[in-house]
Image 1 (cartoon, rainbow, N blue to C red):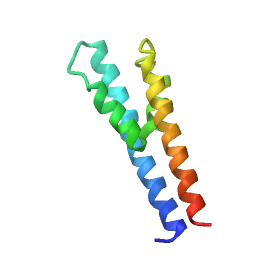
Image 2 (cartoon, one colour):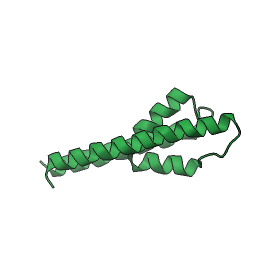
Image 3 (cartoon, rainbow, N blue to C red):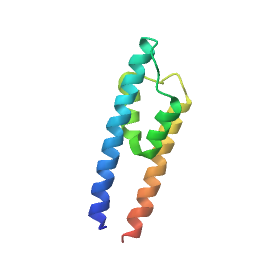
Image 4 (cartoon, one colour):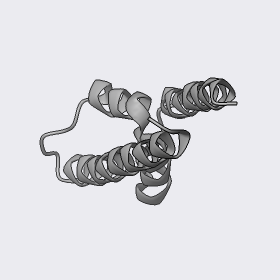
Length: 95
């Protein structure tokens, strides 16, 4: 696969997971307000680590969700750091 193909695939991947995680943050916040069935923190963290961290960061900020949990931004920013490192390594291999 060419570098432009890899980048296109990655953008679709990140976009899809970000939209999904953003929606899950919104749903989980709505469920928290009504004492409904919640989405597990493990699921939210896993999707962030898979690449949905942009949607997680936006959802967390927009819905004011998980703001009292100091470990949540650490996981989200750690996920972003992992992906930045992976991109750095990937792009250096295409040179």
